[in-house]
Structure formats: structure tokens, C-alpha cells
Image: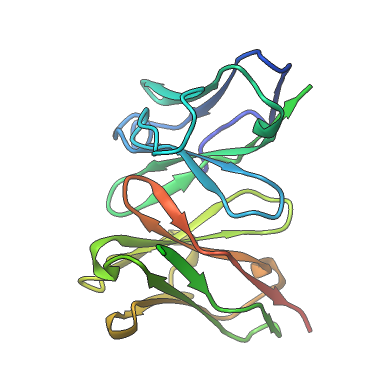
Length: 110
Length: 116
């Protein structure tokens, strides 16, 4: 199972919006509506930001949103804030109790 | 308090095995799947395997076939992940996570260092 493809890095200024893509195949991202996104600050455990493509857990700001088109999922962060600077990972169900993560994207808030 | 508490850091020699525990509290252990993920220093998250604590059924990433065993003890709400034939490439932080509407609950991570 190959890792999902994410850009290595993205950046944006405070108040701007950024979008992180996550490209897989029809066997994972394209085949199921089970894409989730995780935020990870250095030295911390990952934190769930989006599940089931576009659902937001309680407590996650509505500045974070998710979507999917064909084999590519996206995480959009609007109204960037300094504390959003972190690594972001996508994860998809890949069938038969298999999961796959993306390689991760480093978000820099300029 | 809903939490997953993992066992402490381990140092192992190449060729040895390591067993990491993950104790659940604050929720019904058998109601949600447990996922194991690892992260080498400076690297991304890597899915290792999945376990249904109710049935005990597991599935491992193909990369770890034959080297990883996942188990649970429902009487103490604890999941285990054992990795054998360790090499330096297995040096990483190992996480367990509860799979319910995404991985909403994570353990604190267990650092496993493989070194002679």
C-alpha cells in the first residue's frame, strides 16, 4: 500500500486561506468516504481535525473544512492563525481493514 | 476521563522484540477499534495495524506481516502490540489510537529505540 501524496509544504499569511491536497487512488481515497485529517505539533500526538471527508469533531474550529473529488481529498484552513502552524496528515481507509496515511505537509504561517 | 495510556519508553537490541501496551479508560474498550501507528524521528505517520477489541480480529499492514502481533485483554481494557526481529529502522514513537469517527483519541506515544 503506497502512501497518499501530499505536498511537502504550504504556507500562508495570517488571515489567508490555504488548501492541502491528498491524492490517492480508487482503492483508497476515491473508493471510500473515510478520509480524515490530523494536525501534529512538534513533540505532540496527532489531533483529529476532519473525519469522513468533511465532518468536524467537536471543538475543532469551523475554519477547518474538508472535501473530496475523485481520488483527491483536500483540507482547507481559512483565516490562518499562528497556532495553525504544524504538520498535517491525511489518512484514508483502503479496504479490508487497511488504512494509509499521506506523507505529511508542513504548514508555515508567514 | 476518556484516555489511552501507553507503556513507557523501551531500549532494545537489534533482533529483540518489544511489546507496547495501551490501556483504555473512560469508555467501553470493546466498543471501538484500536489502530497502531508509528512515527520515526522527522518522518511521517505510518499505519501498522488494526484490531477489533470485541472479537480480537486483527489486520496488519503488509510491511509488518510476520513481525507484528496485536492482542488485547478485555478484563483490563488493554491492547498490546508486539514487534519482533527489531532493527534500527524500527526506532520510532509508537502510538495507539481509538478509531471512532476518525482517530479521535490517541495515546501519548511510546518511544522504542533499537540500538546495540
